[in-house]
Length: 506
Image (cartoon, rainbow, N blue to C red):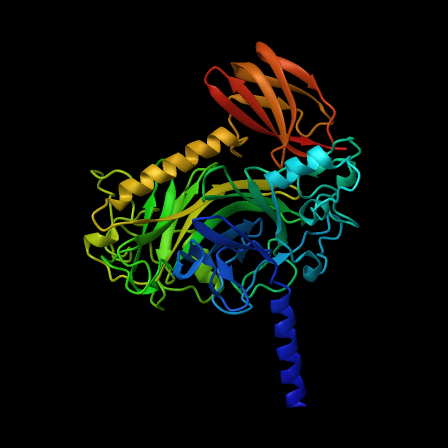
């Protein structure tokens, strides 16, 4: 009997691992694995790095990266979901969407795919789909645009040529992507028990597009976090972490740019990265593009109060700028001393500020480093969503370079490039705009303290539905036809852009 139980456990473990093997690889100078469950830079079959300089397995940038989410419900209970893997089969996320009616998921193996398509393939399809003998490439034919059964009708964004709301590439429809190549993943946190953060599920579906712009190796990440359950969360902290490998893992440091461009980073701190990058020292950075960074914290590979999380409370604490023993993050040394508390670890934005703080100051003992950055949302209601945009970048520097200046420069360039090529909107509500009634059936009024010149309506995937000039009115009525759901209303004024959420009910 004991042998039989062991066989069952072994078989279950293998099946679970096999359900998380789908991936695609993106980038040129920095080759990055994007897994079907949304985790980044890791081979999930053995938890080894899959993020390399020019594809060289001896030159790793990342061990892993991804989301770290902590939400508090109306009963004061915390829910957690993370991509941070401490061991084989350590998952909080699984491939696939969530049924919009039952809140259940399909079989993860059916969705174990990271759908990748290039702009070149799309252009070729648009030019040739009507020609005899043309075969639609698999990347376009299998694009997960429409959900079946109880899943959302629209999943991955697509251009609907004949406007019949059904993805049909044989009739000319094609994926709507950003950049020159993109990978799309759909995953959830409710298919199985959480054995990464060991906490309660949120009931969210996440749709992620990872894309690369022209002449760049940076990977931009666009996340939509959709609440598919009836749970109401009164506070949500959405984090992104980078677990840096940076050649030899034993001599790394971490840092934060808490002011523009808001960035977290891990870098090799030695003069020489022996047996790996040598004198071209590696670094990896994540820049927050559409939301304000509210806190950062970093931990090492040890088991001290600022080490790896091992129980659910540790995951919650790190989201609240607390160490594993619930003591406060404080300025100086490794952040665990009884000094002035702070929300940002190893802050390096303004050099003459009293909060300026590097790991070299003490110096700290170098080693493995994972750093997290969080943004906050005041609520996440059923059927509502949050959006997060991140730029993940990596590179090298030489010992005589000022790394901080290089990271500021590179992060700024990445941010500006994102602004030029993306429809950017923040989820925060501006009190200068009144929108009523909201929710509505599509008939509503807008009142503003500022003169509005244009208003634009986007859906949760960033697709523009309406773009109208208002001729500088401060109050006006709208009657628009949209499918039920949550939208963003963008109001362009002389003083900039204001944003409101617009809920359309049946």
